Every structure is written in structure tokens, then in C-alpha cells.
Image (tube, rainbow, N blue to C red; front, side, top):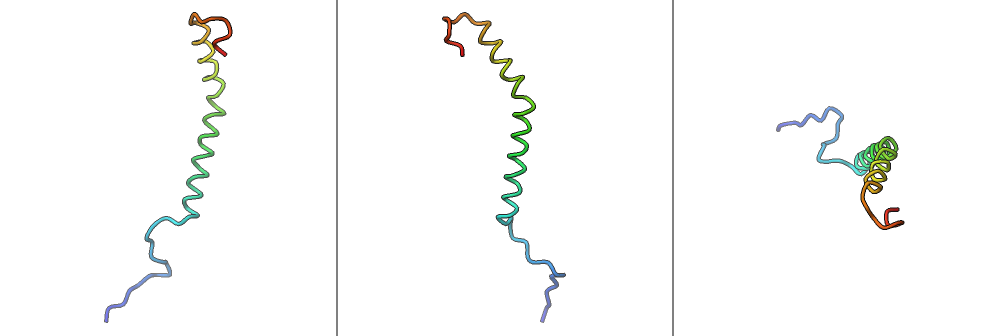
Length: 61
């Protein structure tokens, strides 16, 4: 009769909810870092773009 050797590890069939939570947390941290790093530059870009177009007063806020 053949024996199976698991070496103390459980069979890995997929990611657990803890692994998905860790992945979601890392993605959220990366998004927050990108927004913090590039947020001001992006706001300035939109502001300059809007001010360079000819709109009625107050339509570009």
C-alpha cells in the first residue's frame, strides 16, 4: 500500500481568506502611496489645463 508523505505541510489547494486580506491590504497601501505621491502634481496638471482653456468664469472649478 503506497504511503503519502506530507512532511508536516497541509495540502495547498488555494489561497485562504487571510492571504486575500493581506493582498488587498498591500494593494490599498500601494494606492494610498501613489495618491499621496502624485496627487498634488495631478491636481496642478488639471488646474493648468483648465486655466489654459477658454471657459466662462467659474465653470472650471
